[in-house]
Length: 260
Image 1: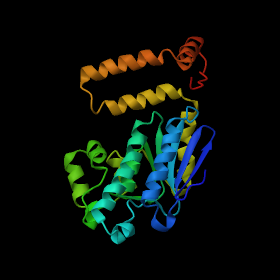
Image 2 (image 1 turned 90 degrees about the vertical axis):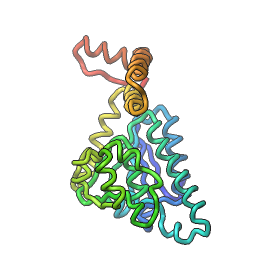
Image 3 (image 1 turned 180 degrees about the vertical axis):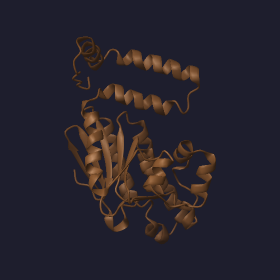
């Protein structure tokens, strides 16, 4: 299927999504929000896909919401309401998807674009990338991202960066605990592939359940979460991958997982 605002391919069990509005720094309009959500839903229900990579074309990862469209919208409150809802659906799908999602940040990640990266499970960024929550800078209350950012960096740091729309680089993002790896521009693709190669060969059901448990840990109390861990471990013990994993351990060989 052809998309107007993105490029979608599957290669060797990995889904690649390229945001493709370079003339707008890959910023979100309603169409991009709807197309991205549709692709993410399809990926989520496809058991053959082991991991997802989200990238941007041109000079940026994603510049946030399309400010020009905001400017020309006749009913600006309605436009922002519709746009943020479209973006939120993508964020929720990324977090609920029991597959690892990698953000390959090749340039600017501002506003909703920064929020999109924060929703991902692993962020790999080039040294020249720049980040900002950005909303305050255009007189807008944040439409997304404040919860993810605050959980990662803490309250005072969140206030410093969000309330002032502070722009910061990849190394600072790494020090804040936001970015996993900072690489040279010509190393981005290779580094991303190092990660996805791991996910191609790891037990995908167990990886997906582990991601679910990490996310649930933010909302569960200790007793509830321990029970969920016990239940999830028990369920995963019924998979072929678990049987292969323990057999390989006993036989002192490398396991061959099939995602079953």
